[in-house]
Each structure stands twice: as C-alpha cells, then as structure tokens.
Amino acid sequence: MVRATNEHQRAALKAAVRHAIRRCGGGATAQDATRVNAAALSKYGSGDWPDNHVPVDVALDLDLDAGEPVILSALAREQGYDLRRVEPVAAEGDGDGEFSPLGALAGLTKDHAGLIAALVAAASDGILTETEIRAIEAEAYELQSQLSRLLTVLGVARSKGEAA
Image (cartoon, rainbow, N blue to C red; front, side, top):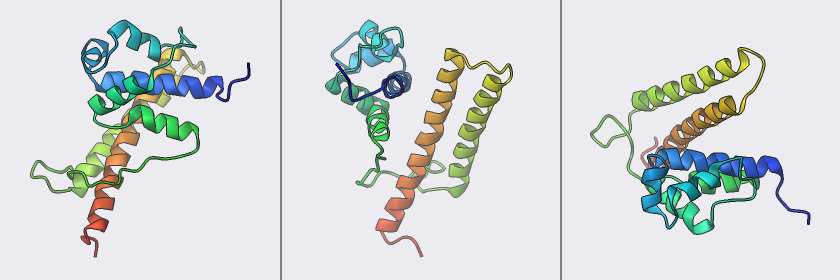
C-alpha cells in the first residue's frame, strides 16, 4: 500500500501532538481532557510507535485544552496551508487587556532566543539527535504561537478600524 503521507509528515504530526500535550500540562493532565489515557497519548506523540496516530476527536480535545490549534496547524502546514483565526480574540498586553507593542516584542524576543539557543546547542557537536530535534521543535512552536497571537491581535485591530 502506498500512503499519501510520508515519514517526514507523520513525524511532524507526532511532534505537534507532543507539543500540544506539553501545552496541556503533560500526559497525566491532558488525559483528563480526552477520551484516552496518558499511555495512549504518549504513543500518539512517540516515534517508537510510527503507525499509532492521534484520532481526530482526541486531536481536537488536545487543541482545545492547549488553547490553540497546535495539531490542526501541523496538519494544515503539511498540506501547504496556514491557519488564521477569524473571530476576534482578546488582545494580550500588560494586564489591562490592551495590546502592548513592548509586551509583544518581549514575548517574541524571549521565544526567538529560546529557538536560537536550541539550534546552537544542536549545532555544537555537529550531530543532530532526536532530543535536540524535539527541543528545536518545542522552541519553534512557541515562537510560532507568539507570532500567531501577534498577527491575530493586529488583524482584530485592523478589522475594528483601529489602524490609522
């Protein structure tokens, strides 16, 4: 049987599942938001179980509990698409509910630095390990989340006519 997906795409999906589980607080916490237990969730994110993937309803449970479409975004990305939230969301800011360019810059800088640190650590010996790949993926997803939140806030401001 020839599958439409390749190993890289399936590995990217498993990485997204691992990231969603981390955002939910780990397998023990995430299992409470799904119909499966922590052991099953672990298999869905593990490269040791290459043919055991997250069911669609469990992926939705994880994304909802994570507070963002981590797995859905990975599925879209592997098909050449990018997700964009269409309904307004609350702006992130300095605690008063207002968008703060300085707060956005701080969050992006922190996550960008984390990604650079993971890349430098991986490059230090010239050998890319599975642990390093997972660390890079985690940092890249965090940076992607910050950028998505920034783009959403800017889109909401534009749609409300707040842009000059």
